[in-house]
Image (cartoon, rainbow, N blue to C red):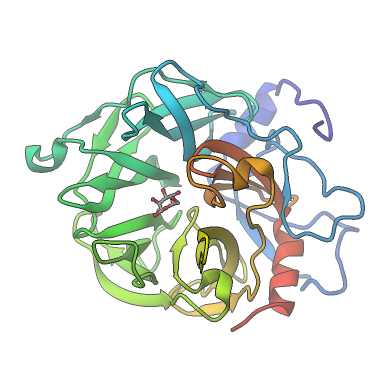
Length: 364
Ligand code: BMA
């Protein structure tokens, strides 16, 4: 059950949603001793964010939505499953770009819209990209999208097939017309996540270059671009390892969330167990101006496959976050995850509590 019924918004509330960037502090009276009073979340208010409070007695940093999965198998006729997908607040509702895996088991991107961020109306047709150089316009496959609003556009970043996986880029204003841009990097590369604003005057992106297989080549790098075509100033951000849950490879999850103390990054880390890979979620805080500098990084995971929809499916033991929506006034975060390469799920956390916990449980 949700904490409170989701209600229709009046026009003032909808106008507030259109506010591009606002800064809020924690609600008076909610300040904890361990929390620096100055910590602020930067970003929009999302008053209709899906939310459930931490279950009574729970000490977990991240807790699951009680009605998971929010997208089950076979949600639309062409799809076997929908997972590892990204959503954003859009015109008082929610819009998203979804990884839709067909019965061919090839993945492509579809749009979806929702009033409450929980119940999704998914397009039955894959989204159409226009404007690309014909050399890169053929969509071999597309998976693991992220969607990020930067200035006037929503940017889609996905794993795009071009002689191997690389980072595809497109932008839209209406989630109907998508303009494809150049692929950001050479293959092989995955887990592209653009920052929600320019840093030092340039677009900025995290990614995870790799070799041709699932081998030990799995660190997160930072790159900058003046024009979204040419990317450079590559910097190493974080390496795999340090603790076993993230020992095999790591990759950025959703685009980082700006706070007054740094960029809050959710990322996945992979354990290579004797029974196969296990994908868990960790959290880090990156320097605001030089995001390749890691201020804090969780020694332990904050979410790991435990629920049956995470441990059983096409690929068991996978939790894979691709979107994190933060309501700045409250610090509430709704985390959208893929589960077992089969389902779409929701989990929740609070940024203020999470950052306070991270500072006390960091391996950096
Ligand atoms: C990664 C990506 C993800 C997938 C995960 C687990 O390499 O391909 O899309 O969820 O493996 O299979």
